[in-house]
Length: 243
Length: 208
Image (cartoon, rainbow over all chains, first blue to last red; front, side):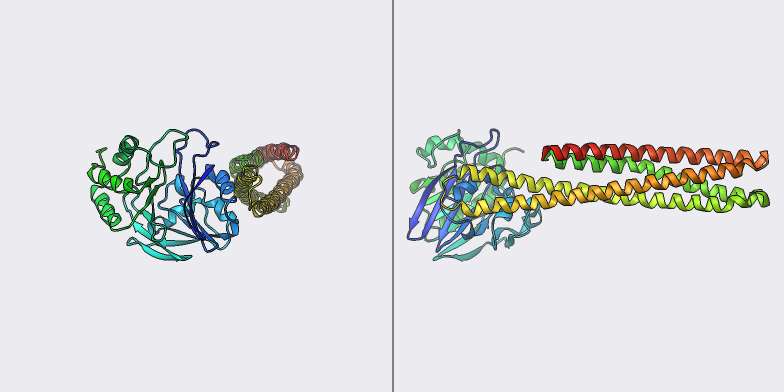
């Protein structure tokens, strides 16, 4: 599995993992993220059970497993968190932050040692190392209980399925040409996102944030001005079209 | 599911299904014994000698019912344990993959230690399943022993029935026939279960 550093400032780092060349065919490609701060690490949307082994091997290049004390799941989908049962056997004293409405569902993946910390609908901010992480409500985008994560110091927004694109294997980690990239995003957002009202609420929240990188769980990462371009594009897009 | 876990899971489920029929037969024996008790009461003084035999027959049928239920409980435990074994063996496979993929990574030591721990846990689970299989075999053997006792009791019963007048003889002989059929059915189920167990054990041992 490939890994790229998104941000580094002293001991505060963001690393994206993905584009696994050994990924079984027929499963959607995913981006997994790790934040390091003051010797602790957090995995964001750590991925499906099929990617656990390459993900664990890749993470072990960067941090001791004992330093991973936090997990985050933006929502309940298997490509997001079906590896939970295996992380549960790996980590000691770890906490999973995930939407409260999915607690009884996500625990079906196996959650005995890991503590499930349910996120309230309105979101929450936690201290992580020297930074603050804000769990930004993104309900109905696409899941009915859904969060993005914003790191104020790194100015990175991990947006979950928002901004996702269905790209061919081996595509670059970053958006290179926004206009071309929209063709890989349109169907995904129109079909998976059910609510224009929810979309507008999330865009309004995110416009208030200072974002250098918008990092989705599928596809490519948006940098600088492409973040605003994405918000404008998404704002104009009619979603929930399959009715 | 792993081959061994798969086999034990299927075995446990098939034993539970087969024993459902055996339980019906055991209940039928109990019913026959109760019928025999009523017939003895009707036959009067000449059938008094058969009373303790029929009581014993009734006791045997109740023992068989209990044993069959115990086998059913044990089979359920084995099927659950097989699923646990499946989950643990999948975890071992994933961790072994991670070790292979992460060769040379800075922080692999803890993961390698984790693989050893998971392998140990898997061995403990497999040993537990093995013990439960032994308990199951023991219970099936107890049913066989009880059925042997039932045979002896039936023989004694037949001798006593031979001393009766023809009117009562017909009633009791039909009871003996029904009793024999039920015990033969149970014996056949138990033999098939034991044969399946033996095959599964051999396959599991050779695959380890």
